[in-house]
Length: 150
Image 1: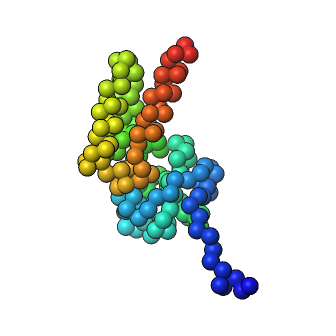
Image 2: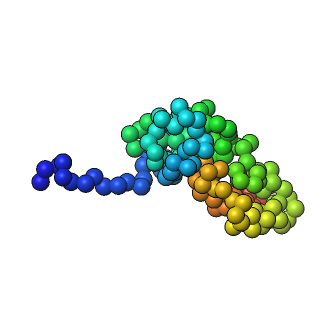
Image 3: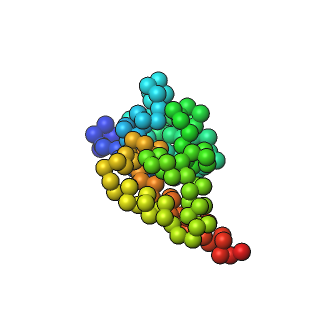
């Protein structure tokens, strides 16, 4: 059969061309929120976020075109560990540490409630276009595990 008539498979997975981490698919709303107009032209309308904190690539597409972290409108977590983990409500790693120190995850519970509210704008504010809840919970559990293993 002539290849001109064969539809190429749509891929929803791609690896970062620099670090080979599995990218997180993002759409135009997310890209437009984090990139200026000129930088936006450097990647496809549907691209991927590289989740590896130490990789210099923020976004990439299936053609291996990349946007570096330095081109983002503002620092984002996890690329910048001082940036809020939650871009919508400003929860930081320090807030999570405080919850652990206090012995109760008050701030995290408040975030869970807020994340379900109309005030959550994960698609545009989060660099992944997704809710931060899973990442916040993983970080809390990692800190808790480190503390209990001492």
